[in-house]
Image (cartoon, rainbow, N blue to C red; front, side, top):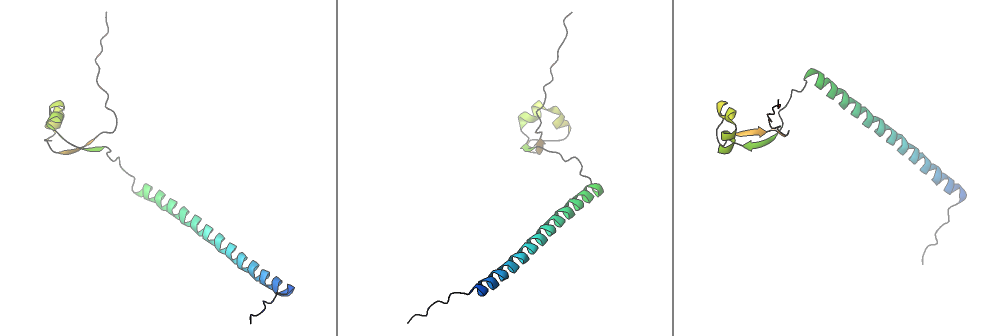
Amino acid sequence: MSEEQKVPTKEELITFLNEQIEVKEVQVKLQNLNTTLAKGRAEELQALNFIANLTNPSQDVPRGTPHKLTEEDLENNPELVEAGLKVGDEVLKSEEPVEEKKSRSLKK
């Protein structure tokens, strides 16, 4: 024999819905608190970053691609030999395009 399901009364439905409303209100409060906390943490990180930059400004960090010197590099760039570099030494190759020196003369 199966039990018949009891149909909730109007008062029971209203009580249930009111409880759900209370739960949702608490969830909204929690979400607002989490949002406020996240904003506060982000502002704190920004402030710490600002202070770090003031107290320890970054110096120009050389940028480029690592490159092992070859014999051809040394032949084409005698200043590297003068600086004491040799084949196999690793240097940073500039990422900026190097402008070629063009000598121009005016015709008279």
